[in-house]
Image 1 (cartoon, helix red, strand yellow):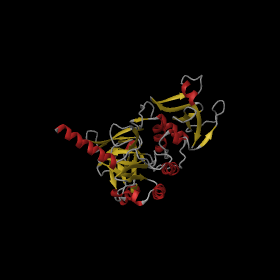
Image 2 (spheres, one colour):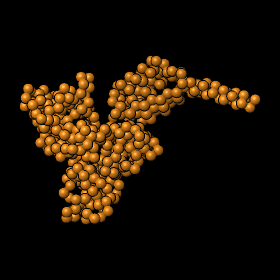
Image 3 (spheres, rainbow, N blue to C red):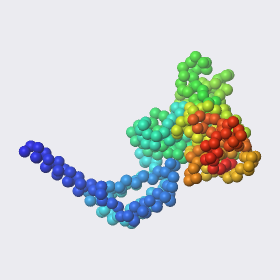
Image 4 (spheres, rainbow, N blue to C red):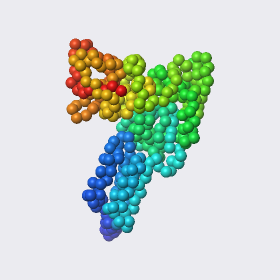
Length: 375
């Protein structure tokens, strides 16, 4: 009898839940199509913008929760909801990111040498990108210890809160205006005092940015983005210049920088001198030389002037980008050394050639070669 009562109780609870929350109930097909059209129009690439819509039918009403980084997408989604659902049929919350609870602190400075961006807020999630010390991030929302951010190239991903320092608009202005230096070597260390035996405060990678404080002989006193002060060898530093997406770096400088990274291993999602994927390698080289590139190879392929190589590749100059992939997509990118030779990251950073008489000839890359672009 006791087991029978428990069975009846569980059945009743299940029945109530099924009535209250009906996962099989679907939105009108026209409404679904309209929402998809908004996504296609305003957020065609979800790597660089956010458009998430969750719907469930519960307690006799549609509960719609959505978020986006695009104001026009939010406005369009609100219009669709109003068109297809009466007020008594819906409970709606559509948030425009950055989330309101972040207040004015919607920017952050990376304060570790390299911070990892994940596809979702967990350490086991795919590594999609990396950011280095001193980079300015845009903070979109928080979930426990994780934050959804956008990098300087606009790429979105999740990062741990301990990897950066959140700042408000006033602090951002101060950081932007401050005199800064950038690490021009592949690796370095920030020490507590101007001598090799002092405590290590942080490691440093190519492109790390610090606030300049004082020249101190062979050392430079700097301030890390989180406010700590330390010393770094002056010989590894160069003047910081903020990269942009219109600069035209010198091809010879691009090649020299690329060759300085020979042998660094491949890392899926890698975007630092600790490890690269193919577009992380090209992106890092160009950023250090002043040009901000989009994150992925197929994004970088949208830039620049298409160059049709002649039979000897004699019209291909150092610093041109070279792209590879099957007929329907771009999957790999490298940097031309001029002529048929190029440098890229696959297994590690190394040089190959499209010339089948060259010892560095790579038949696979020749077979999948697509085109050259000149920035």
